[in-house]
Each structure stands twice: as structure tokens, then as C-alpha cells.
Image 1 (cartoon, rainbow, N blue to C red):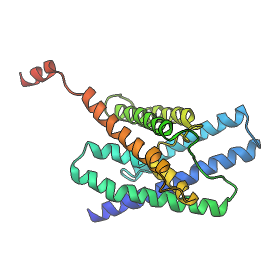
Image 2 (cartoon, rainbow, N blue to C red):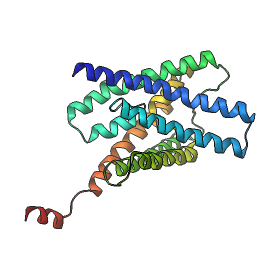
Image 3 (cartoon, rainbow, N blue to C red):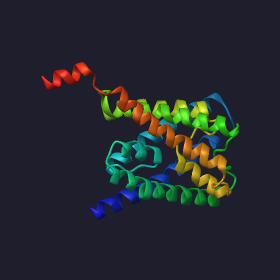
Image 4 (cartoon, one colour):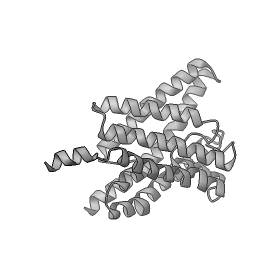
Length: 234
């Protein structure tokens, strides 16, 4: 049991490390290939992003639940027991943050010209609302794919990946459209603004509240009606 927990935590840290690196590698590859913004560059970037999400979905299966996003594990922990919920908050999420911080630190050493990561370009409340709405939407979609919509791993991953990409594009000019507190924390820590009110409220509090709300909303929508309960009892 302890060995399985240890492997899961290490998987979380490694996948978080790989996630921040993968986004930078895609950005550098597309930029060096097209030397600037163009329609073809955006098509290639989006295609590589979808392939990247397929890769991480496969890694999640191979590691028996490894994850790079705190919202993913928090969404699953809500429907579990209280012990699992505490384990997620106290162990899995910190390991994901640790992996992201180490990943960003090495990125900036290797590519100091890469930029400063996602930043808030609107007001505090607009940013919190944006990240909250984006997170609420993707968590609802994720819950639906995992419990109601039939289909193969490829089909569900395809729907999830396109949904994440579309939501990311919608929020990219406002907050970065990250929907991943650990990844943002890595860049914020490198900039030295990881304990500011803007970072905590926009990239942690709002997404986590939206995750809880989406999970409870989905559970309410799936609540059996009185007629279904009567049929089961009869």
C-alpha cells in the first residue's frame, strides 16, 4: 500500500514536470518552424497540443491515476471518502506543485528567453470569474465523459482534449486560460509573485471553488428522481 502511494506521488511530480516542459517545447518548435505568428502555425500548435493531451491521458492510465493538474485529483477526491480527500490536499497537490516548480526552474535556465508564463491581464474579479467559469465547464465535461457518455478511450480523450483546447483559447488573452493551479504556480514562483492576492484568488481559489461547484452540480443533476426510486424499491 505504501509503495503504491509512493509511486502515485512520484508519478504526479514527474507528470507535472513533463507538462510544463511539453507546453514550452511545443511553443519553441512552432515558433522556430514558422518564425512568427501565422494561421498555419496556430493550426500546428493546436494539433500538437491535442496530441500532447492524448499522451498525458495515456500516461495517466499507465501510472494508474497519475495526474499533473490539482483540479483533476480534487474533482475525483470529492466523490471519495474523507481520507482520500485529505490525502489529495496534503500530498498529491503539493507533489504536483513541486514538479511544476522544478520544471519551470530548469526551463528558465535552459531557455531564459522563453517568457514569464501565464499572467493576469484583466482585473482581479474578471480574472477569477474567467478561471472559475472555464474550470466549471471542463470539470462538468470531464464528469460527463467518465460516467455517462459511452465510448472508447480514444473518443473520450478526443472530446476532452478539444474541449480543453477551446476553453484555453477563450481565456488565453485574459488569464492564460490555464485551468491548472500547479502549472501556474511554477511560473509564479519563478517570478516571485506566487503569494500575491491576484495569484491566490485567480489561479487557486476560483478554480478550486468552481471544481467543487461543478462536482456538486453534476451529482445533483444525476440524482435519481422519485419515480426511479420507487421503481427500484418495487
